[in-house]
Image 1 (cartoon, rainbow, N blue to C red):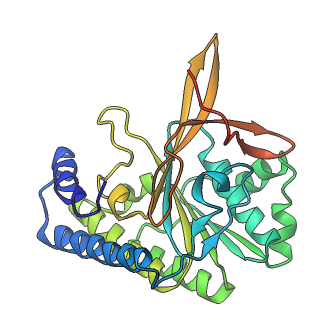
Image 2: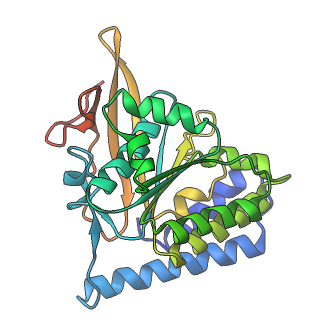
Length: 276
């Protein structure tokens, strides 16, 4: 779907969330979409090269021409138990192994729980923290401006090139109404772009509305969307993954099987199609 063609759809989606269409939000989103369209035109004319960041997640990079474009903001969304947090942790751990420091910001789980979850896959998160290559933060701040400062300061001071925010669904706790949430998300997107960090933002799919995100604007300002599935087949649940959107990328449009193993973490069977 063309970015500006999606403009009308975006307005309908936000309205469907029961919010007043704030003029500042709409103007800012339109500006973002216009900027991204300009980037795509430069790529098409061969005037801008796409530098990619390997996720290191087995099989996933095959779906996106070898990796996520550098400094992109990617929404990883799905229902409970689909592997969203594991995807985020592995993205950071594999990044450290490739020489890129990372920051994991959790708005829900205690940092100790994240570290313990990582150990079952053999990922030495605690060791990487002690070596000053990985930073796991638990934010107890309920002031968005301070949260934004926390993110930017830690990325800049730590020299991080990768960031995971888990989960954006909890940002609603910081605000009283819907369109101030949307304004804040746009502000966050701008800030992350300026500090040049490849970011994964974790979210929950909304079963009632069918939306991929809780506030109706994230999927339009995000450069990429990765959707994780869980479906029942022959009496057991199976996981799947698809790339719904990845700008500047000729990505797979298929749903692929996804496995989570204790020895290797996430494994995307990129040559197979998911069947439920």
